[in-house]
Length: 182
Image (tube, rainbow, N blue to C red; front, side, top):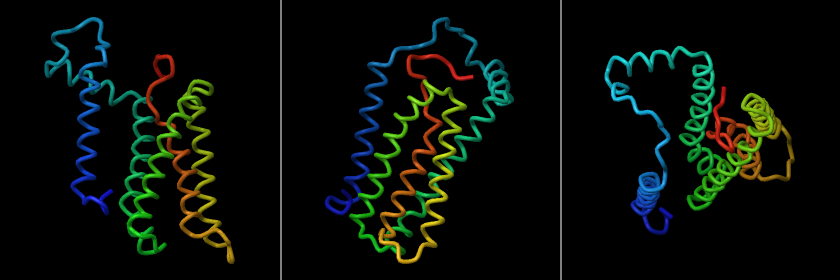
């Protein structure tokens, strides 16, 4: 997109999608709070609630998990242009398609994860995701040492990236059918 219409078009699309999401949330997403507490946003109760949440072991565990997942995603995104274009020799357009496929894979895997959560529970979904994450790491590290491999390096990286995406999806939010995760 940026190659055809410039960087402003790419950022314009992001802004349009953000505006559409805001529009949807404002008009179609109902309020979930049943009993309103007028003091809930006062500094004292608000800070006390934040403190309780920040000290809760389940919150800390899931926050660390999601932080490491997004840290990994940021690292991949920050370094991917160099690796795909300079090291693997992809054109800017091919790199854009690689990143689009990564986004599509990540989105699809979030839907897969929702089914895992319903069937296996949150902890089971995370365990299964860890298996995919380990498989992606193993695939990537072993494929770099196989000589005479007929799989192009860019495709090899894409397969590992897709498996990594499947493994980084267990943070998906929302339990199918509603409910809370403990």
